[in-house]
Length: 132
Image (cartoon, rainbow, N blue to C red; front, side, top):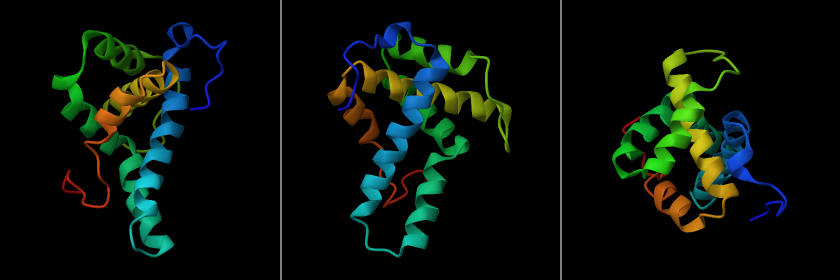
Protein backbone atom coordinates (compact mmCIF):
# COMPACT_ATOMS: atom_id res chain seq x y z
CA UNK A 1 0.00 0.00 0.00
CA UNK A 2 1.23 3.44 -0.88
CA UNK A 3 -0.13 5.67 1.87
CA UNK A 4 1.55 8.83 3.10
CA UNK A 5 2.24 8.20 6.82
CA UNK A 6 1.54 11.88 7.55
CA UNK A 7 -2.00 11.57 6.19
CA UNK A 8 -4.79 11.21 8.75
CA UNK A 9 -7.73 9.59 6.93
CA UNK A 10 -10.12 10.42 9.78
CA UNK A 11 -9.59 14.11 9.07
CA UNK A 12 -10.23 13.88 5.32
CA UNK A 13 -13.48 14.92 3.74
CA UNK A 14 -15.70 12.09 2.54
CA UNK A 15 -15.22 13.30 -1.03
CA UNK A 16 -11.45 12.89 -0.72
CA UNK A 17 -12.01 9.40 0.68
CA UNK A 18 -14.28 8.67 -2.29
CA UNK A 19 -11.66 10.03 -4.69
CA UNK A 20 -9.10 7.56 -3.34
CA UNK A 21 -11.68 4.79 -3.04
CA UNK A 22 -12.63 5.15 -6.70
CA UNK A 23 -9.02 4.51 -7.74
CA UNK A 24 -8.55 1.60 -5.31
CA UNK A 25 -11.79 -0.04 -6.45
CA UNK A 26 -11.02 0.36 -10.15
CA UNK A 27 -7.56 -1.14 -9.60
CA UNK A 28 -9.16 -4.07 -7.74
CA UNK A 29 -11.58 -4.74 -10.61
CA UNK A 30 -8.89 -4.42 -13.28
CA UNK A 31 -6.59 -6.74 -11.34
CA UNK A 32 -9.34 -9.35 -11.03
CA UNK A 33 -10.03 -9.10 -14.76
CA UNK A 34 -6.34 -9.29 -15.71
CA UNK A 35 -6.40 -13.06 -15.18
CA UNK A 36 -9.60 -13.41 -17.22
CA UNK A 37 -9.02 -14.78 -20.72
CA UNK A 38 -10.56 -12.14 -22.90
CA UNK A 39 -9.90 -9.45 -25.39
CA UNK A 40 -9.14 -5.98 -24.12
CA UNK A 41 -12.44 -4.64 -25.43
CA UNK A 42 -14.40 -7.27 -23.47
CA UNK A 43 -12.32 -6.71 -20.33
CA UNK A 44 -12.97 -2.98 -20.55
CA UNK A 45 -16.74 -3.51 -20.93
CA UNK A 46 -16.74 -5.84 -17.93
CA UNK A 47 -14.77 -3.33 -15.84
CA UNK A 48 -17.08 -0.47 -16.78
CA UNK A 49 -20.09 -2.45 -15.57
CA UNK A 50 -18.53 -2.67 -12.11
CA UNK A 51 -17.22 0.86 -11.70
CA UNK A 52 -20.47 2.58 -12.67
CA UNK A 53 -22.53 4.22 -9.93
CA UNK A 54 -25.50 1.87 -10.26
CA UNK A 55 -23.37 -1.22 -9.64
CA UNK A 56 -21.54 0.38 -6.72
CA UNK A 57 -24.91 1.34 -5.20
CA UNK A 58 -26.05 -2.30 -5.50
CA UNK A 59 -22.86 -3.51 -3.83
CA UNK A 60 -23.06 -1.10 -0.88
CA UNK A 61 -26.64 -2.26 -0.24
CA UNK A 62 -25.44 -5.88 -0.24
CA UNK A 63 -22.61 -5.02 2.13
CA UNK A 64 -24.75 -3.01 4.56
CA UNK A 65 -25.70 -5.90 6.91
CA UNK A 66 -21.99 -6.79 7.25
CA UNK A 67 -20.75 -3.27 8.04
CA UNK A 68 -19.66 -2.04 11.45
CA UNK A 69 -21.14 1.15 12.88
CA UNK A 70 -17.90 2.98 12.05
CA UNK A 71 -18.08 1.77 8.44
CA UNK A 72 -21.76 2.74 8.17
CA UNK A 73 -20.84 6.21 9.42
CA UNK A 74 -18.21 6.59 6.67
CA UNK A 75 -20.77 5.44 4.06
CA UNK A 76 -23.37 7.88 5.44
CA UNK A 77 -20.88 10.76 5.37
CA UNK A 78 -19.94 9.90 1.79
CA UNK A 79 -23.55 9.55 0.73
CA UNK A 80 -24.48 12.92 2.28
CA UNK A 81 -21.42 14.83 1.05
CA UNK A 82 -22.08 17.86 -1.07
CA UNK A 83 -20.01 17.76 -4.18
CA UNK A 84 -19.97 16.30 -7.62
CA UNK A 85 -23.09 15.46 -9.52
CA UNK A 86 -23.98 12.44 -11.58
CA UNK A 87 -23.30 12.96 -15.28
CA UNK A 88 -25.88 10.34 -16.08
CA UNK A 89 -28.18 8.23 -14.07
CA UNK A 90 -29.96 8.61 -10.82
CA UNK A 91 -28.76 11.03 -8.12
CA UNK A 92 -29.69 8.57 -5.33
CA UNK A 93 -27.54 5.86 -6.95
CA UNK A 94 -24.75 8.38 -7.35
CA UNK A 95 -24.86 9.29 -3.66
CA UNK A 96 -24.83 5.63 -2.59
CA UNK A 97 -21.93 5.11 -4.99
CA UNK A 98 -20.05 7.97 -3.32
CA UNK A 99 -20.67 6.30 0.05
CA UNK A 100 -19.30 3.04 -1.36
CA UNK A 101 -16.18 4.76 -2.69
CA UNK A 102 -15.68 6.68 0.58
CA UNK A 103 -15.72 3.40 2.50
CA UNK A 104 -13.21 1.77 0.15
CA UNK A 105 -10.95 4.82 0.41
CA UNK A 106 -11.26 4.92 4.19
CA UNK A 107 -10.41 1.24 4.61
CA UNK A 108 -7.45 1.60 2.26
CA UNK A 109 -6.07 4.75 3.87
CA UNK A 110 -6.49 3.44 7.42
CA UNK A 111 -4.55 0.30 6.51
CA UNK A 112 -7.46 -2.07 7.07
CA UNK A 113 -6.26 -4.36 4.30
CA UNK A 114 -7.88 -7.55 5.60
CA UNK A 115 -11.28 -5.88 5.99
CA UNK A 116 -11.00 -4.29 2.55
CA UNK A 117 -10.09 -7.66 1.03
CA UNK A 118 -12.97 -9.32 2.89
CA UNK A 119 -15.53 -6.89 1.46
CA UNK A 120 -14.04 -6.64 -2.03
CA UNK A 121 -13.69 -10.42 -2.08
CA UNK A 122 -17.48 -10.65 -2.34
CA UNK A 123 -17.19 -9.10 -5.82
CA UNK A 124 -16.00 -11.21 -8.74
CA UNK A 125 -16.53 -9.49 -12.09
CA UNK A 126 -15.46 -12.63 -13.95
CA UNK A 127 -18.61 -14.45 -12.82
CA UNK A 128 -20.94 -11.45 -12.50
CA UNK A 129 -22.70 -12.50 -9.26
CA UNK A 130 -24.99 -9.48 -9.34
CA UNK A 131 -26.61 -10.72 -12.49
CA UNK A 132 -25.80 -7.79 -14.72
